[in-house]
Length: 355
Image (cartoon, rainbow, N blue to C red):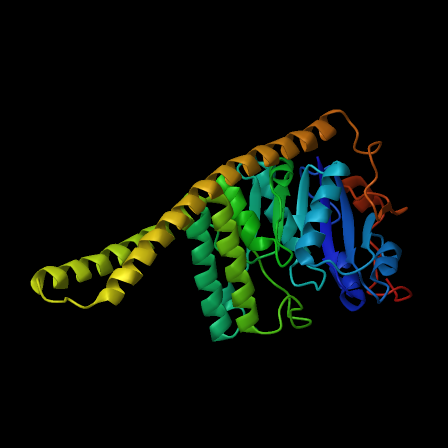
């Protein structure tokens, strides 16, 4: 059983050492542990430091491509490297490495395809009351949209089995957290929550500049993901509202027309707006039908991609197949229980620091 811990990074030289040093060197039920650092266009030597500190794989981007793209590329690389379980964690040492064994336990036991680390955001000291409220509201929206019981939808601390890793795809460039949960719910993957602890905050989040911007972009991700997987419900609801509006305004015109006959009834505006609303309802209804046909075609495409990934694993082309651009293996030896006992970790916070 092979575990790969992937760490997306953007200029994390100051924090990567502590993050790597905190990772477990052995986990019961896991034969081999490797670390993949995804360098998302860093300019501070993050990739070079990762290699010096003992990361087993480094995936480099020539320029910054965003967290969602880095995450998806890391998952794809982990699959090609033969991972049975993938753990995603942050490079700023927000999450405790000691929680990784509990995070992977439900996947090892076969109870879950995805395990999400629940930070219990209501108790986080560095979260303002507004951010706590928005976290609760956002997680509730994602639960309803995905049909899952995930408690901390924005948590990036996750364990993913190979089946789930091969089945999930990220379509936006902002964040993977919400969209993958909605996809997992649609695909019928089993999701479990595990309560985790967090380390003291080392720096402000780089994902967003303001609460308003974060809410706006996350809301767009949720609506887009929901529309992709449930287009009939999304556009059908809009079409129904327009139809009710049009019928209501049309009924208002007919009421006054009958009440004032044969005099001029007025309220012609109600008739015009009502007819326009009914026409729009018909057009949006057609969009719902078209969206459902596109969604069916997308599901077939995703199933084909899943089968290609699984075939790639089954025929043993992980190391001999087409190379992933920017991915390189270092000279570090994979961690295991035997190597952890024979040679305890000597990772330092920075090269040259005493171990």
